[in-house]
Image (tube, rainbow, N blue to C red):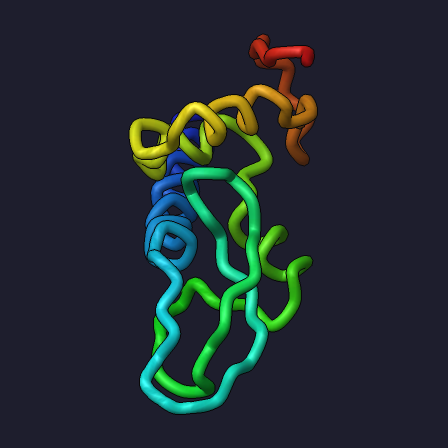
Length: 120
């Protein structure tokens, strides 16, 4: 049972990392129409969601109507999300500093597995 649980956790983490890369690691894409609509995108260098001007059509998946949606989708709750996504190597000093300021996150399960975090 424990092996099956670990396999499912690994598959879930890999799937989440793929979505993270697909949505959040893309550069902002204005699109090809002529409107100027405020949208939000996740900047992997700063580790923050920032505004950009969207044309109204086209673009990629790294665009959000509101900042909160961007943050809920793209700001990882743990460093493991960054490690699985491969973004830890792509992030600059500002992004790495951001990761160190993340709060401790125990997760939803009740298992006792010792882990470490940086208490900024």
